[in-house]
Length: 457
Image (tube, rainbow, N blue to C red; front, side, top):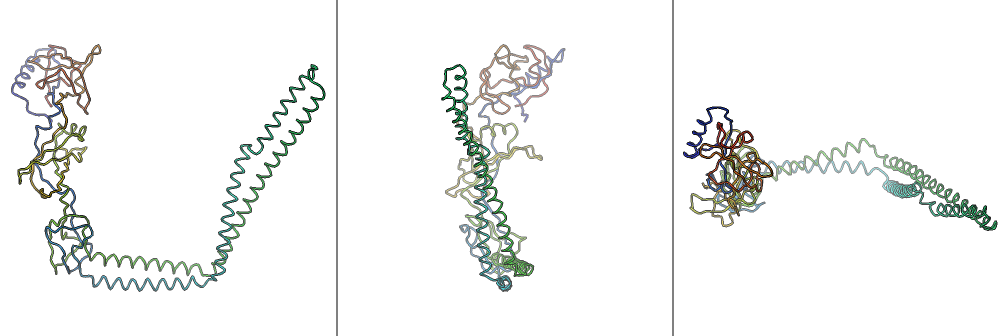
């Protein structure tokens, strides 16, 4: 956000503009340096409000039969605030209860027509079939995994490989006379035995796989049969009649629940802890869901929303954990402390300002909803760093520098950079009176001619 600059700087800039009108001038924009404590220079007016407040709007219409609270009353969540005549609602509830009982009795009569003992036996058989299928599936999965990984034949395969290696070694040595025919025959017999054992292991592994597969198929067949038997057993009840009767019960239950809600809605309770801030009803008044009857605020936690310009919103966003607020309360003259609770990431289209919410503790209840106040934001533990726009920093031969406007001339100043803060960077080597070249900094030269397009913070 552009701000009015000092008369001295205006004079400097005027001279710069005149000097730059001659020839080969470079168009630039200039920004004043800012400090990390610049937030403290601005005061924001606003109102203190409860951070937790509720309008009490009844869900039911009718005549108020009792009012349990008044303005200023302290209430807990769930406390009764007022009641509405429930005569009609109670009649509707009794009617809904009777309909529910009737529907339930009709459904019970229909489903009890089945043979309870046969149904129990069929259900037990179905459960056994389900358990057998589960066990068969587990065994099949385990056997298949062992079969596919060859773990069932690994010992036999290892023995065969060892016997084969031994036979080949002795056979080679026997050809040169280094081993006897007896040892060769012994190695051959061992190889034949290992080969037979390997084939037997493979056969047993395949047999285990076939057995597991057969058990799984039989379990599936048995489960299908158990399901069909259970369906036939329970099918002695007309399925359509039972379905209709069950739907009637569900419909009656929904009507009863709605009637019960209508009765409950005639007793209006506090949705939060707090104090009654307003009350517009008395016994005998008519209330409806279109008009608020009361309001409740919780005074223990207050808040103040301020409107901040774009010159400060980045600083607030980057360091809101270290920013506190000093709030001067107009009514009492006292100053209270708050913290930044939230900041809007977008500006209000109508004003161009950003909303920042300040949270204020109010345990003693001295702050009241709607009090006027003035807030200042304070950067905690700040060393008043000098900040400049990041894009104004240039680098040459490993050294960083900026161009400043000094006495109508462009002056090159070497700097040391620190921590970046959004669009700004902390530097040393400049003073609070300096103005740095931002746009066009890469085109100017020291003592070169220039034309200033704009000046900002």
